[in-house]
Amino acid sequence: MHYLLRKQVVLPVIILLSCASQLHAQKEIFRRYHDDMTYYFGLTLGYNYSFLHISKSPMFLQNDSIMSAEPGSSGGIAMGLMATARLSSHFQVRLNPQLIIGGSKYIAYNLSKTKLGEQAFQNQTLPSTIVSFPVQVKFNSDRIGNFRTYLLGGLKFDTDLSSNSTQRNAEDIIKLKANDLGFELGVGFNFYLPFVTISPELKISNGFSNLHQLDPNLKYSNVLDRILSRMIVFSIHFED
Picture 1 (tube, one colour):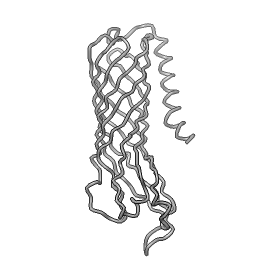
Picture 2 (cartoon, helix red, strand yellow):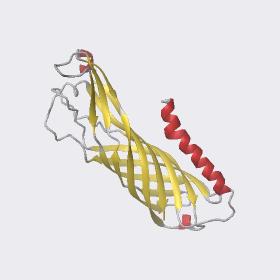
Picture 3 (cartoon, helix red, strand yellow):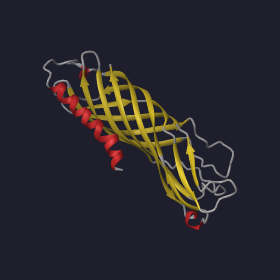
Picture 4 (cartoon, one colour):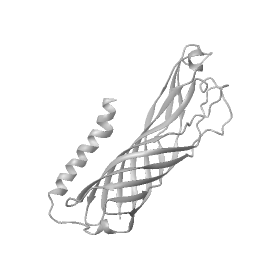
């Protein structure tokens, strides 16, 4: 956990603060009237660290062949478009549809009883290619030179193009539903340059829909109850 915080959070924050101090030292004000625009557009590039939060079903304690089931994680990249509309001097609403590629997740099983040719440790990989539709509200600080910070929060709707919910049953399969609803919270920084505004952003993106399509006849599925999506996202927005 400490390694995750250092890699995913601390390093980007140090870089952002360093850039902010350099821009603050500049005297020339770029894109002076940008914040007064009714709306503007942009592009998004990002990296996400995604994982699953699982809870065990009562069948887990009754099962004598599966000793443990723990979720794993991986990273992926995101590309998207952005549309921002001004509500007031400090508030904006933003649409940021994205395609999230990669970030496949897995659940690692430790088996106490195995069949012929079956290994005691099994990773059930769950590929993921997500189309995400977040709607966010931003609260912007006052601008200081060519720098500004903001907080954001909102809701998202995700659909997984790689969902296996329609696959035929197999003993070693775990089915996940395609659609997910969740919330997002984050912090970002606006760096005003002569022809573009670059906005690095760090946020958490958590689903609150149960993705698990439970099948009591499948041994890897019936020991699990709820499966929720979790994601830490670092994005860079290029704003018009």
